[in-house]
Length: 484
Image (cartoon, rainbow, N blue to C red; front, side, top):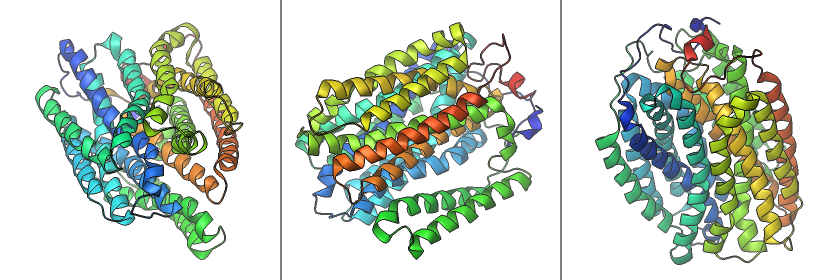
């Protein structure tokens, strides 16, 4: 496929930014992984705080509770691709520094919020900062990696993303055991500032791409407004009624705006993302598969704290500890995934991983207040192992489909798929829970999410085809060949 179909592309032969010395790969990878952990951990920690938020002086409605979680994730998702492109144009280190600063500002405003509305706005601001953080971290980690370690770097970065949920649950549980919900943001603020200082000192500087296109404010606005309208329709449906004018209007606006985004992007000379990029089968498969797995994971995260605290009577600290199987499964199996891909190929590994995620979700639908913890932990482990197995080849499929000088765009697309999946998982599970008892809502919600992941997973495996005997692309290595 000619490189001209790719969005905002330099020619395939254009020189990328000068590579950073490979001897700095280990420290830089550790630092980039730490930034990822902070950005993602706060989502899990805020999910853990939902019982305290519900009983706080803010007096949030059920829909406002969903928005407190989803505003961060939705801003994160909508701005990831523009943020990746911004990193290409302005330099990825600068984008990462700006992201950490914006994230810290959002944490400060959230800690001081006197009502649900400013808290939701502050969460969206932190999400915008996280959008700058994610694509820059993966790009910088790959830049410092030797060619034979790029798949390893993707696996570690992916594992850090999964481990972040555990860090958020453990750390958030300890904070919430002794502090009110505001403590989460007061703790996150100095961590963000510390990482900002370390990035300024240690991260390699990248030259802006000489061929990166201009900003696309119209495309960005259409994507953001359309996505917000879609999630608003889902979240507000139970409160206003699915046939009410506000909800139907939200869905109609989402359809019009997202269709306008697709049409505009297909015709624009230099769009935010050219829809023709999805003609690359493995990129299409990777994007859909990543979104599907995160729909399942964040449906679980949204309800996990409520189940363990309300139904099982656990304290916040014990609730955080009880999610350990998620991190264990993802970290261990993500490190083994590249070996499995080399031995059996990407498609079987992705298929097995997505099947395990689906099975875990289906088993979660059987939970009751009397379910023993060991049974619950076993189901979490099955689901986490499936994610750890499938995520590295899915991420590599996206990154390996784009040339090295567009790594910011590729990692932005990869992370956007994660966050759109997360936003949908939270919105759907929150909507199903509204007006039901907790265990009844969980049962219905997990059945619905398991069915969705099964369908999306089947389509992913169908698209994830590779020529017989073809080597698996790793990271941005070999990316130029992937698009020719």
